[in-house]
Image (cartoon, rainbow, N blue to C red; front, side):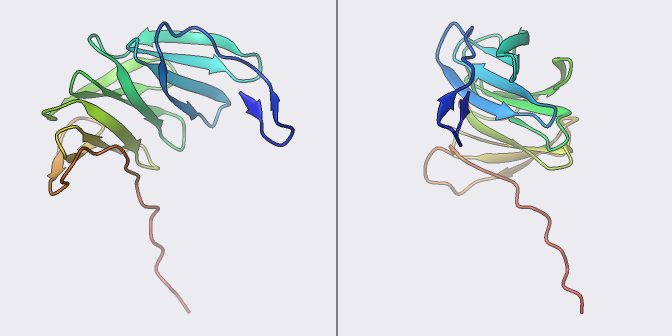
Amino acid sequence: LWDVRKTVLVNELEGHEKMPTGVVFAPDGHVYSCSEDGTVRVWDAKKGKKVRAWRAHQTGSVKHLAISANGKVLATAGSDKTVRVWEAETGTEVCTLVGHRGEVNVVAVSKDGAMVASGGDDNMVKMWTIEGRGDQTMTGHSDVVKGLAFLPPIQPLTN
């Protein structure tokens, strides 16, 4: 972790057995990282110490992760073609979302934590509720999907 204002290294987060593939900062000050080793690790950013870790995808790597704005919902994208949703505070799995036909490269969590979006090697974007119901598939991409984001809510104009 770097202090970008001072351009000084603050802490090194060491512990993944293979290459890290994603990092997110939670509102509570923790850092979540994922790796090709299939794990998610939670770190105390100030101390640079691991708080907890768990195997997020049983086979293959965790390719990406995202956390809700309130820090309660964590989603992971796996090379096992699944998206997994977790209670961020405990690492307890909420659900496994199945439907991609290739590796899942990227996930995003809506601001309120109610929806998860995923994109993958199958050229699809899928939208899910965190309960795993009501998924929608958006096709039309001519290549793999490696990035996506939720648009902030649009406020109506008033005068």
